[in-house]
Image (cartoon, rainbow, N blue to C red):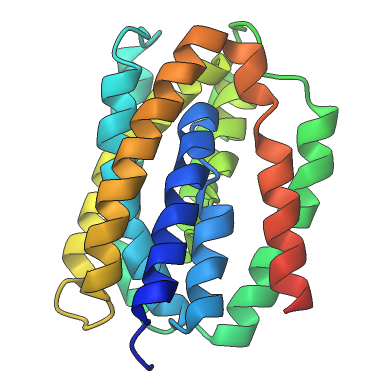
Length: 250
């Protein structure tokens, strides 16, 4: 690929900062915009995902700082989810290196569109619920699937993880956000380490993204804590629709 120009880098970092504020509020979803934007600016899907993993690690750290007063309901659930994230994170780099440009764009766009009516229909995340043991087991299975998609495709698919945690493990939106961010520290960290020697990380973009996304994520997390679960639940859908349309039309 040709190097991204200075003007393009400034545009990307400005968009990333704004989008990461919304991602910090929603607990994920910023990659719906930033990953396609990197593809649009000339990076390959694999390079875009690689940059996204470093940015995702950064926003996880700063969002957790911003949400440090939110208490986790079950540490056992957190440990299980982090273990799943570690396993997937170790395997994902091998798949990322083989991503096909057009297949990636179309598949991601379709996935986003499919998720929109699910979010509209399922009114979850407002208050804590207590699902059955069987429903929780199925929830862990779905978390494994959604984390695999997140690890390989990036692009904001962390929203899938949040939805499963709320719908199948009974978490509120804020608790799901904190839990997902802990798992992302493991997931994105292990994927990024696996990609360090691949040549896919475009460092001028990656370093800038880590700084701007980290700051935006902290601001968004503080807003989410102040506004509450209902506000957090309202942030997902617009980001998803814009990104899906962008990927399918481009």
